[in-house]
Image (cartoon, rainbow, N blue to C red; front, side):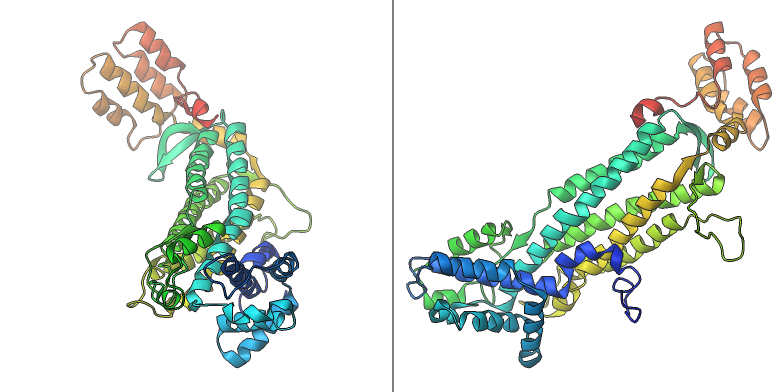
Length: 449
């Protein structure tokens, strides 16, 4: 960690997001560009109609594969050194590869490195690989972990009756587990959608028409070549583009992650509120301080940190989703600088996931407080009582319960006295008299399992 880092992602929080560096750092972007360039050169060597690029030997294939597979920090630094002269990042990658080939038997095909390509042919595929692999290897697995932990809390607390609150006011009881289950299922659906996401790529030249390709080799089926090449990278081929792949799929990914983060903000705020009500205690860790001046406090900082970082993430990803699908005519460079922030949005997301996970691990259910809250709100039974009264044909049941309960503090005694006076079948009356705020939870328990 650098104490002089301008961004907390590279300073205070660097250790929390180090697994993303392999996919979204500057070095990672350079590495993925090298992979695409080498794979493209190899593909040209396999196209029979491009006779000027001969078939490579096994040793030459091994050399090229090693060059991309073992791409090192020293290699990335050499590319950056070349860029200081070229003032062009993709051209620097091209020159780096040519530099490596210069002293090998592949010297004769050097000018087919980056053949007929625009920079965006390489960039869009590199970003596609970065985003797909980063999501698959880091973000989605962590989200699955979070889902499993939230779902486990739901199952463990399926039977813990709890007063619900709508508009901040006491409402029909639920169970703690069922409320967590709602979040778990919302999260599960979004993970499923994210796992089915397409990651697109294009390889079709300066304005998407294979102009340069056709000028050199009109006999080659460049559409087929491009499709096979892109799909060989495990990306979906986009046939229709301008100079740039339109980035619609990137906007889709950002929007999906943003929605996931919003769902988790919802959870973080709810838990923060439940801690405030005393429904949860937080496990203490020796040596930790809750407040700099109030020794008794144990602040819900993990949920606050999660919410704050999700907000930052969503701000960045919201801009990415809104901006990236828009480009002036066939190309402008506004996407170039913006795309470099993919790791920023996902970095803040990952910090949020880890903070939330840490907070969930500290929670202890305070059954005594939850039960006390329920038993202080017998007025919530006005709902089932007036519903049964409707069933039994009693006139104006809602209005009678409204008169009994609204603006008044009533408890078990008053509720049961009201039921005793009802002219309804004894069987119905018995059920209402046995009802309590704790057992009036519908099928919440089953829903949580």
